[in-house]
Image (cartoon, rainbow, N blue to C red; front, side, top):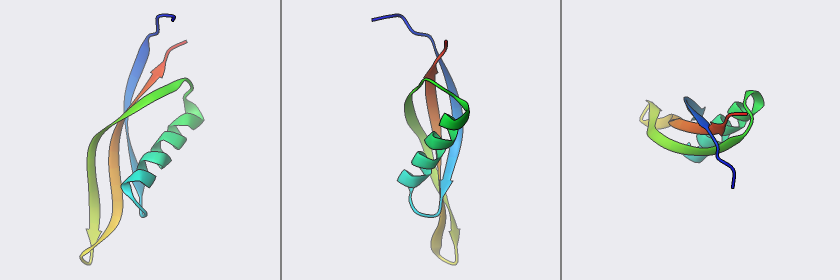
Length: 68
């Protein structure tokens, strides 16, 4: 196994469907401009409430990717 060096960034995904969808959206978007994505960690989960119902789920993620 080779030695790897990783960079870690924080991003926030948002979805009207679910927290899982917010994670999927965030990772997919990060993958459009970054490569070698290896892992993610959910750091924070929150949401927006409108008229007593959940309007948006927001999930803060740390994403790790290997440097070239």
